[in-house]
Image 1 (cartoon, helix red, strand yellow):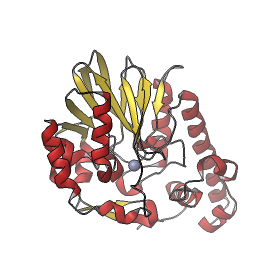
Image 2 (cartoon, helix red, strand yellow):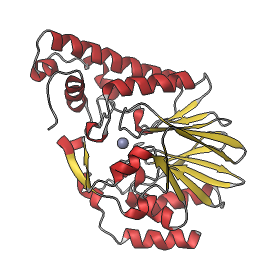
Image 3 (cartoon, rainbow, N blue to C red):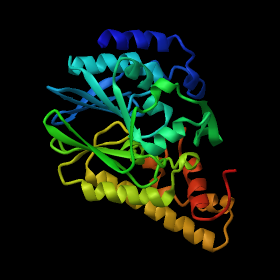
Image 4 (cartoon, rainbow, N blue to C red):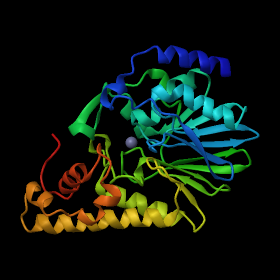
Length: 311
Ligand SMILES: [Zn+2]
């Protein structure tokens, strides 16, 4: 199977890198690195923590959570191989975005079985997908081989490598197919892009994401996590604990409350932006150029009924 994956990688790398048009020059000229998380779980990540991959390794084989951008597919496979020679059997996608499903096609062609939520597969069937960054750019439909082979409605459980891996739908937060993955013995939770440590939440309204669902989903994660649970953010350099998720949730609730009050006072979007409702948080969550308070505030405003922003 490894030969087949390599062959599939070679074929896929010869195809145009459609996503690369949307990222800065040199974005893919980085080295992926591997970070031990806890128990049987590792994280493979870009140095900027963009789209972290979970890797679950044991005597029965390897299970991956997300598959990075397509241009990183070869590096991702090499990094997994450094952890284990075992068969890569399963891949779970946390959601539909191209930085989380780019490696799907070569992995699937090599025999890896892909799992995701029903809604995520439906989103993948759209002729092209809209994305909130850059005022709603588009990216092309992923190839058929990249689609999940198995989908679920509420939850499923893997009994693999001596532990239960719980996979379940979160409330509609980042998208309407957001999937959390909980490794029960290793005590690791991968929250996909519902949780990020480096920027404000991306609420992808084009793909069913909502503000209310973001708060609900974070509440769910907080209720699941114990004091020793390690949490992999979809985006973020560090593996963190429950407290960081609490801070992120509290920030979103606070910003939403401020914006709600401004709307009730009759403020326009420009007025809300001028009031700087995120000011005290911008140093922590507003420093990623591609997703700052300039992107976050209009979505909060829109989600709270302040006006129709996305047509
Ligand atoms: Zn995403």
